[in-house]
Figure 1: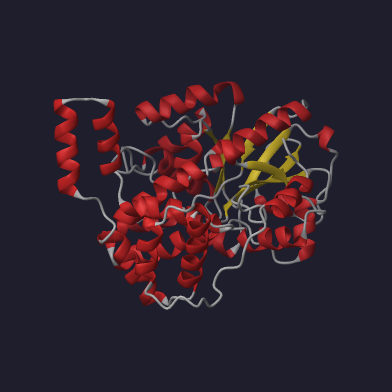
Figure 2: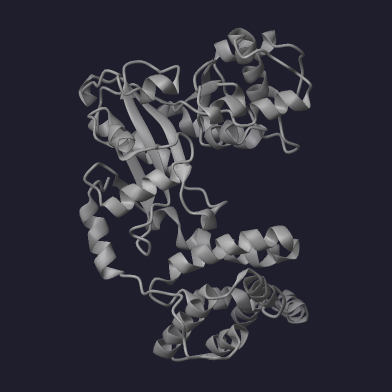
Length: 417
């Protein structure tokens, strides 16, 4: 595992971003500039044109950006008639020439435009930001989902796991990175620099993040890890300022207690499964004393599910809360059979199992609002991850401990919820 900021510093030097958003002299509509770029054959000229387009885009207001996305969606869409002709030709004669012609016709012009834009230095980060704007526009104009589909297709290939660099974040990491860890923390708020220090500096704490070579100073996702003796039952214990700090060699459990996505423009492009598995594998090599790999996870949909079912439960009724949480995690499903809870879908889809449920585990305002303070441990049993993943993907089987299954059976009501 690459766990040094030296690589990041090197990449920053080699791939220094050029600023976008500066005023440019080109007065043509941005749409005309895009058409010019698509027809440009000279590589250097194309790079300059792409830079100008991205600079122009940064200066557009919200309505202008929506209009730009509608141009991409309609004017640079697939040509259905040409595609049908190429498909018929290939059906009649599956020659290499007809295959190439069909492949070209099956790609929209906007796909090629995004590729050409990405030739500009620093463009990848700008295109990720552009997708964040696009997601907001899709909410107002759902038909723009065609353009979003194309962009996601490209981003998934550009941000393939093979291109990502994993780095350990510690107290000596650049301040610009640390500031982003504070800003992007989505599960347990980091309020101060001292708070951040307590999560990074002690010997029993770790933080790892994925980076992309074209965005070396922007974490894509990061996970915070606590090395403990035994499986913790509350996040208050994990984050306590007065807790006993232990040597990493004295720990027997690695707890993934917070995982945060950093780039809204990469929504729907999963990195978390690879990050957790990579970190667990690396820790198993460096710290053979670690025997258990678990999460301490929120249950964000629990209270909404209870309200929708007209179920009221007292906050201090821990046993009932744990029973209902177990029932929710095991029985509440989406139409496709997956768990209703998004965190459960993430971990179970990655081969984890539900291990234990704890009332009073997160007494923060957010924790109480989401689940009345209930949290859950998912276990990552390294030899069983692949098997669990297959059982979940094929049969939507929720792997859970006997204790959790027993709690679910004792909860009010029975059957699928």
